[in-house]
Length: 206
Image (cartoon, rainbow, N blue to C red; front, side, top):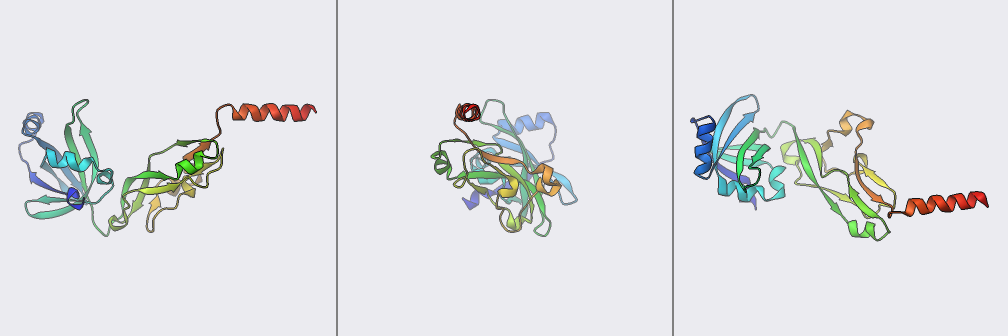
């Protein structure tokens, strides 16, 4: 799968909507590379290689390598425009990275042991599917695991409950406790809360 994260790119000088349209007809993807204080560079990539690579979840949070005229440039994918209904990638934005500079990006969440939680009689509800993080490129995880095994009915795990890999910090938590987002909840079965309230009322009347 590693070769999926290395893409060949060519510098393009023919810019504009018409040029981009011609590229797409030739099964090419127009793109731009920016960041690290350098001038943006307009690029062209082969659509079939890009399309295959982007089917891997890790593509969106993995350090990618662009081969541009013999030079290997490490970067992250920052934006991807797709055709509204065709399986076509319209445009891509790449951001240069430096191994010594921290990056800000979103990493997908993988929920594990959901079945164990559901056996307790509740339903698992996801509140987020990715976490905004800051770390050095070498510490960037492909995904972050959230273990639902210990969830009790009615309990919610927040960002502060998630164990992040070494060297990785949450952008939201860095803003303060008020940004401690809910991640996953084990909801009580539908009607269970009503039953509990009714039982409580009966006990009070007695």
